[in-house]
Length: 210
Ligand SMILES: [Zn+2]
Image (cartoon, rainbow, N blue to C red; front, side, top):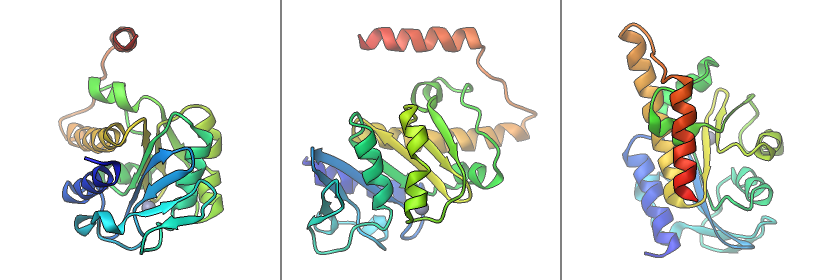
């Protein structure tokens, strides 16, 4: 499978799994130093096809494709410039995680091992008008701190990854976590994994990688 097909498959999966709605959300992948593939503007992701994907440069020149690139591309380009380790970005409006973004309440992470693994570098950004430079700039400071998950006040979420698969896993895990936390509240409260266990788990995972 080539990188464009993979981007299309995972973007469609976002819509099919209810992780974004209607034409909402935008996804991209870095192919090389100066080539980004990004989803087009105003497209229901369920119907996305490889020929719809737009090729742009890091300086926002259109390099190929029939459609226009997502209006959120400034955010994608800023992240790629700031973070050489990032090769894929998913922005979406998953309902449970977005409910946290609307309420302003923070999502507890230390409740599931998968969430600890994928979501521990989480940032909360203030509301900025979507598609503007101000919206993109709000990411700058948090990117420098190495954050991978961005909860956008009154809007949705953006996640990044080394690969399409990793960015997608972050998005789906984030939405599952938000959903489980909300269900748990009805069961009388959240029980967090003890801090000692969290530290040992992160150590174990990081040692496994080396
Ligand atoms: Zn959005």
